[in-house]
Image: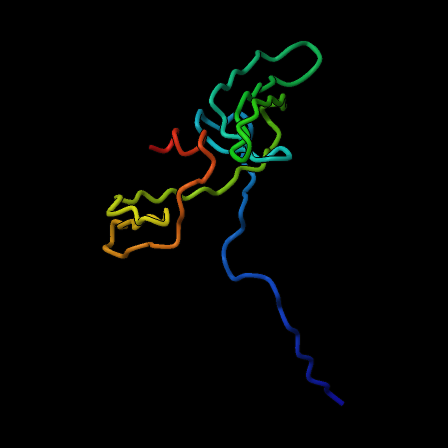
Length: 126
C-alpha cells in the first residue's frame, strides 16, 4: 500500500548564502567566511615550499564589527565565499523622527530605515 508523505519545509527558496572558491582565485575586496564574514582588503600569496602548498594570507575586516582579522589557507584549498549584493539608494528626505526616505534605482522608495541615535555613529553618517 502506497502512503503519501507530506513534508513541510522551513527553508527559504533562495540560493545558498555562500559558495566554495579556490583560495588562490579569491581577489581583493571579496568576502570570505571564516567565523564572521571578512571583507578581504589585503591578500598575499606565498610561493610553494618544499613541504607543501602555496599559502594565501587573507587580512580583512569583519563586516559586522569592523574588527581586523587574518587567515592563512593553502591556495589549492576551497574557502567559503559570501554572496553579497549591494544596493545603492538616493536620499530623498530625513523626517523629524529620524527616519530616512530612500529611492532605489528602479524607482521604489524605502522608508523603514532610521538614522542611528548614538551621537558617534550619527556624526559618521552625516
